[in-house]
Length: 275
Image 1: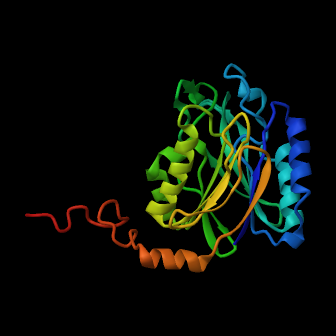
Image 2: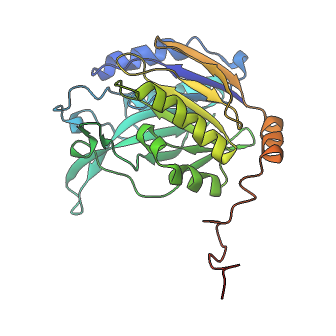
Image 3: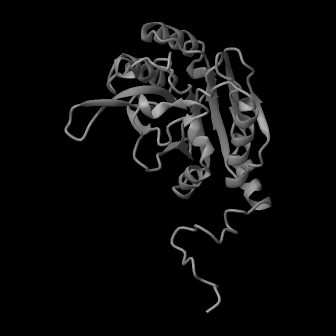
């Protein structure tokens, strides 16, 4: 599977961001043979100041940003995943906090899946839940070039149970768009957690992060935790080949999924226990 990870820095002006995305994606073409293109979390509109009301930034799933991404997916003949904000509603159907959403488009330009971020970033002195609503707890996995790609967003990376849920749903690639905040040890956490999710699940991991003022460092990681391609902090397009043969060899060398005894779907947790 051929992958391109787009690292960019989104502004709080949606029109400016669409121009930026259009310019970057226009450097890619059908001749690149891409199967999957990944853009960061909040590409549609940056998070901005913590006091900004993101309800003003949210767009419907057929809005200008989605329409742009769909057109590039069709032009490239590739799946494209990008981060956006989707309008939300409360229990009464009244406008509520928006969702931090990933939009996944198929090569024909249709919206094939959406993933609403489950774990909101209420950590390191920030409260994402004051600005956004959490999505339902359900794995979202899409089919790409004979592989199964599970969707996660940024802070989700700190919750290994979500990655394992995606793997149990068939994912052998984890796709992680992010806007990973800078701070003491944060870059180390980013790279360590990405590699950990790859190693413990024997899957490929592809992560597209926003650049400055975020950590950047978009990367592709193989199922044994080897970083096969990566960016620094500046805007970049990272290309990588995800080999199914490499996946099979990794799972033969390290059959940890087959060796599981805890949390195995359908297994009796008391099997083998002393009576």
